[in-house]
Image (tube, rainbow, N blue to C red; front, side):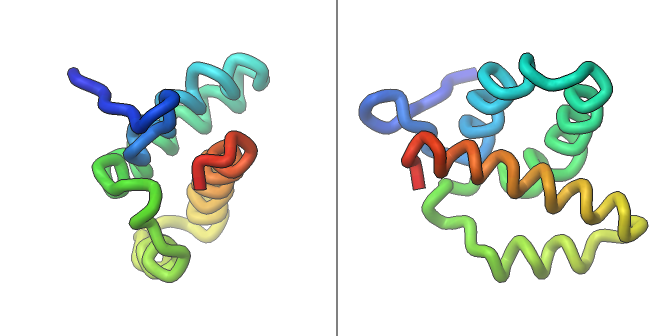
Length: 96
């Protein structure tokens, strides 16, 4: 797999952001949290958003996608919270 980063190692796609998040944020989390977040990222987030450029992801599109998921409300909330977490990570690193 080839991973292309913008200048200064800035992630270009959601998939690259997820990799950075997994490498840098998840190790600090409890085992059960890591497992839940990794599952959410691998099952829902990366398949849908992985190839999207960070700059192209729009809140309204994410909300619409979340609303259309055939999941229990609690599971949908977990997916939303994980999305928030990875984009907060990008914000902390000033990638947005």
